Length: 289
Image (cartoon, rainbow, N blue to C red; front, side, top):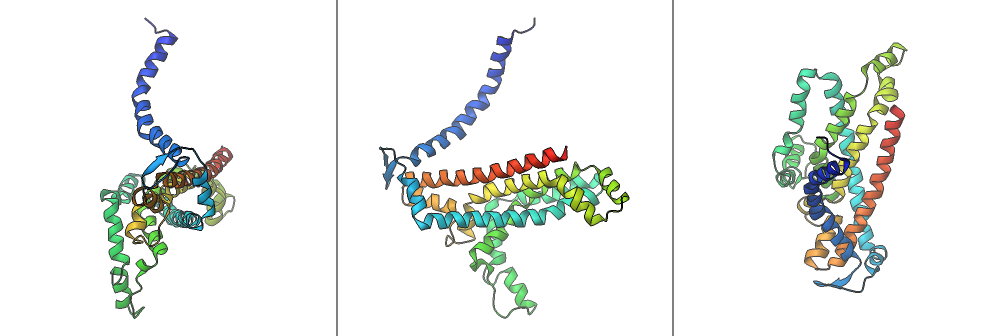
């Protein structure tokens, strides 16, 4: 006997209710709590009424908050640029120059860094970039410098290197998928019409692969803005980013309203940047049809 529309609707609600409840409890409820805390009054472990926007006013008026936010965005943008620029040639090579039977192996090798903990990978970069580390020993051994460079002392540079390595596979995979969808006959047609390989890439391959590039930008940019571990371990806490500032306010100073306001402001900035890239992605997808 066929089900009525109401019975089908009830069945649908029963099917989606477990993940919906899960999403509400683990995503919506914490987010709502942060939003409410951000407009409350408090400090030193005390949170209460009245509701106020003073927390957000302080973020704008106090230079320290703006400085940390600008630094976080700068580091995230540089990491994203570095990662995507390095990931694109790898994805291009695997897509166009590796035989189909070996592409899965190459992708498997690219994901090998995920076999180890993120904290372990960051700690290894301390050994590589630190004072008298692998980089310093190699440069001195080759006679390129007389004293240790100690890249780790430059917090922003060392963070960019570490984060770019950590998020490289996230950038390679979406670009590779986008390149795989490029119609090879279009490239052959361009070359038949007298275009060089370089111009064919610029006029055909690159525009058609831009959805993957924009996806890679979003995948790298969003988490790096809120990264906490790398600034703490690599920067030694001397060059804090926005996540470190939130941790300081929430746990050390126990000022949950200000910490929540910083988190909300960071989410708004990331949301605006993400919307811009999503709109660009739609433009490229629409233009490729």
